[in-house]
Length: 242
Image 1 (cartoon, rainbow, N blue to C red):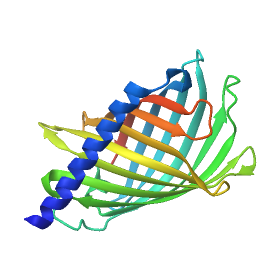
Image 2: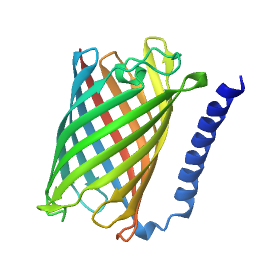
Image 3: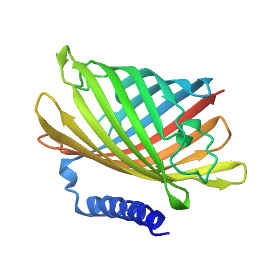
């Protein structure tokens, strides 16, 4: 009992700390140093077999001071998963990858500025590994380690990202609802330092077995940047083709 209680208490503490951080950030923000943005996203997952799939996405960014979208990002990836969880899972996830204890993803992303936004053209190869622990009470803890091999206007700017995410899926009739919270750190190899921190809270709603709607709020702190903070509201539509 004691062994299973510790990770459950730790996970609950993480959720509390992330929620507290979001509240404090909203109350103490210097709004002159905050850029408000909207991040829509469309994603398609095509299952190749029980242990792999193709993942394609398109994202955009709409800044508060622009009347239109400033840039967009298009990408395609392949996911591999299949290791059994370390403990018996409580939830039968509609997303098969969540049932595995490890997922590996490799892909390519392309970003191009729009409407004189001042953004840069970027080519990026990505490689990531996500370990998952199925905790007591149906909690799922994920640790994603990601390498971004980036060329921004031809200049190499590679980085490492680590994201810790806690979620809980609830069965609601034929549907599933998954509230979550996560925190992520960015390390720039060229600068040899941690440069960015993100934390977010949101939820996914499986409206059918093939369509998921997601909404979230994210705060980003980029040191030595003007503006330093970004408050982003994101919405995503995910399609699963089996």
